[in-house]
Length: 198
Picture 1 (spheres, rainbow, N blue to C red):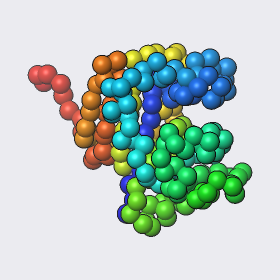
Picture 2 (cartoon, rainbow, N blue to C red; picture 1 turned 90 degrees about the vertical axis):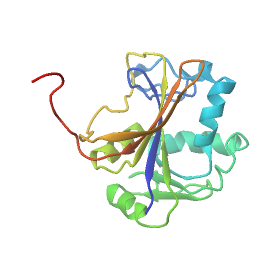
Picture 3 (cartoon, rainbow, N blue to C red; picture 1 turned 60 degrees about the horizontal axis):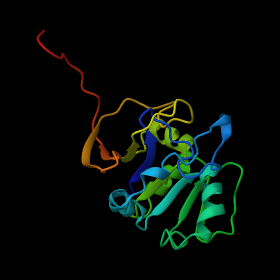
């Protein structure tokens, strides 16, 4: 059974929109595209590099459009991106010239995909898709890369639909520039109780 692992670069206030470039996603008037760029030092690369190992990729249609336009021209920076299977969830697109691309229609297709094969599925970007996965309890791991900035506006990781769930921290690190790498696995249910004396 495949795991679904969400890798998300977020600000302290949970924004995941357009981390890579000024014109990546300006929807909603977002003005801070490329807000992660100044943190890419050697210490950061030590922790971030392993996240780009060869894994099948699961993305929403908007992220797929961005990836499709960019990565085939820069595949030397992400070795294996052309060879891995890229699953794109879309109701409007059904084909691509990018090698090894498969289009999925929705949650039922994603559930079926997790039951076939054993290669984990890595989710990049794809805020709407992540929220759908969280809403349907389909996220096995969250690998959050948290930057020491607040952006005030923009698309947020936990904007809607997140069901109550507990996660267990598996691994973590902090770079010299203050970027936090935190890896969480899906745990059990929420446990409530009293804090302090009753």
